[in-house]
Length: 274
Image (tube, rainbow, N blue to C red):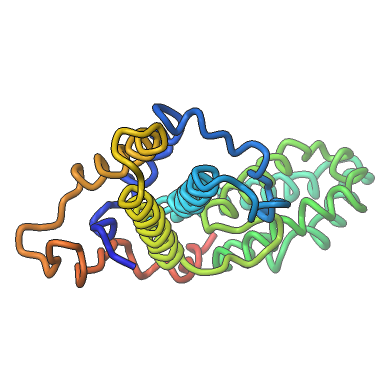
């Protein structure tokens, strides 16, 4: 397959292309019938070519947007700081309840500490990002499963809500779903998503070019193909190869794009001591 220069398009260039798919000639190409959440639509093989092209472009851009949504190392540090703060707040609140006048409140607080806190009450803040997400989710599960009455007794509901919010924000930040371990760092996932877009856009461009070469001039089919092709050509015009690239006239041998993403976000550093 010929390579047309899409490896020089940056992540935001691909992401912004979703607007082109919603306008112009592409607006009339409906993918609603085939755009299923599992991306395994029935009768996909029977879909018209423009529908298949739009699906492929839409899905690779969605994967890229998901990778872009994963937090950077700096953003992850801020999310981790909030998670730690929420844990310390619960610890201090429970400690205060343990010193209360009401024996029932003291007993409830002691049970909460035993089930929902770690070590001296803040040892969980020393965990890495993935274990923190697991710990926070286990706290929320325990609150719903067996600790609801005790939490209500000491009035700690707001603290659990804060922990749940901080935990899910951290989970989104590291690219985890509803309980899955993240499948790679932000940098790796971003590189893979960009590569997917390059492959998809090259394939779509190649098919349209081939069909144009075999379409009668001035025909209705050719006019539609040219209109569908135009946004792709405009994208390449916006992001031309560097002046001194290895690309030849037909794009063969062009240099691969290298994303300038941090490589030190494999795992979050241990949080600061409480």
